[in-house]
Amino acid sequence: MIGLFDRLSRPLLRALDPEDAHALAIRALSYMPVAKAPADGEELTVRAFGLKFPNPVGLAAGFDKNGQVADALLRLGFGFVEVGTITPRPQTGNPRPRLFRLETDQGVINRLGFNNDGAATVHMRLATRRNAGGIVGVNIGANRDSTDRIDDYARLIETFSAVASYFTVNVSSPNTPGLRDLQQAKALDNLLARVIDAREKVRPRSGLTPVLLKIAPDLTLSELDDIVGVARKRRVDGMIVGNTTISRPGSLRARDKAREQGGLSGKPLFKLSTRMLAETFVRAEGAFPLIGVGGIDSGATAIAKIKAGASLLQLYTGMVYRGIGVVTEIKAELTAALKRGHRNSLASMVGTDAAAITAESWPS
Ligand SMILES: Cc1cc2nc3c(=O)[nH]c(=O)nc-3n(C[C@H](O)[C@H](O)[C@H](O)COP(=O)(O)O)c2cc1C
Image (cartoon, rainbow, N blue to C red; front, side, top):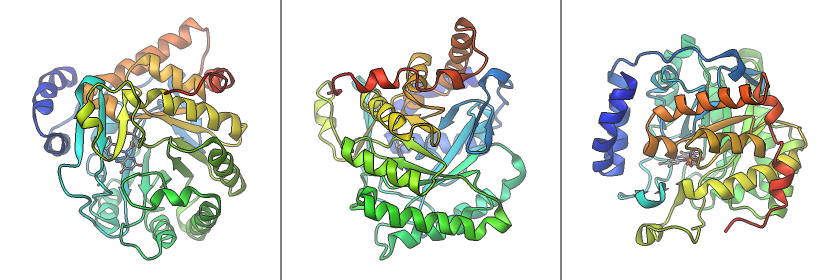
C-alpha cells in the first residue's frame, strides 16, 4: 500500500509548486491511515545519547516543522523523527517563492527562514502524543527579530524538555541573518553553557534530555577545530553534520535555479557534507556520536556516511526524489552489508573511512 501510494503520488507532487506539494504531503500524512512498516531487525538497533534507536535512518529537520505528523513518519519506518526548527514565537518566514527543486541535480534550495507555528502550539501537539513512543527530537532556533537569541534557545529547552527525546541546537540555518555567527567560539560557548544550564534546571522533572549541536557544512577547518573543542568542553551529547550549504558546486546543471539564494540540499551536498562529517569525527575522538546528514538517497550513500563517522543518519531531500520507499531500501541494504561483512551491528563500521577521507583533496 505504502509503495503504491508513493509511486502514484510522487509524479503528482512533483508537478505542483514545491511548497504546495509539501503542504499536501503533510495533509495526507495527517489524515490518511498509515500501515505500520515491519519491525526492524535487531542488527539495525543503534544505542546513542542514552537512547535506543530501532534503526539509524531518521527524518531530518524541516519536513515536519510543526510536529504534525511525527507518528505517521515513525510508522512508515523512520528510526526517529526530528521536528522543527521551532522558534519561541510563531513566524511566517521569508516571502514566497522560497523553495526550489533543482530536478536535474536532485537538489533543493530553500530560504524558508524558520516559518513555524511557534513553541506553544507545537508543544501542545507533542504533548498529546507524549505516550505514543518512538524517538522524536525537537530542533530549536531563535526568532528572526529576537533581541536575545541565546535566551530563545534556553527558553525552548525548558518548554520542550518533557516531550522531546532529544534537542538539536540549530545554529546553522543560512536563512536567518546572523544565526550562523552563533557558531563562533565565544558565542557558541555562551550559548551551550546557557543551554546545558537550562537542561539541568528542568532535569528533576523531565530527566536528562540529550542536547545535540547541528552545524553548517560551510565552516573552515579552523572554525571546526574551535566548534568541536567547545562542544566537547560543554559536554554536548552529539553533533549533527550538517545543515544545507550556501556554496554552489561547479557540477550543478540547473544553472538559473542555482542562483537562488538559500541553502542547497540533496545529492549536490553529499560530498561536502560527508567530508565535514569525517573531519568532525577525527576531531571528536569518540567523545560523542555523530548524525550524518546531506545527500543520503540510497544504501550506498548511507553506508558511506557511516564509514565517514556517522552513528545515525538523517535525510530529507532524498525522500523528495526517491519517495518514502528509500527508507526501506536503505535499511535492507544496511542489513545486507552487515551480513556480507559478518558483522552483527553497525557500530563497528562507524568512522572506518574517516582518516582516509580527510586525506583526499577538498571536494569542489
Ligand atoms: C525545505 C527544507 C527545509 C529545511 N528546514 C530546516 C530546519 O528548519 N531546520 C534545520 O535544522 N534544518 C532544516 N533543513 C536542513 C535539513 O534538515 C538537512 O540538514 C539538509 O537538507 C541536508 O539533508 P538532505 O540532503 O538529506 O536534505 C531543511 C531542508 C530543506 C530541504
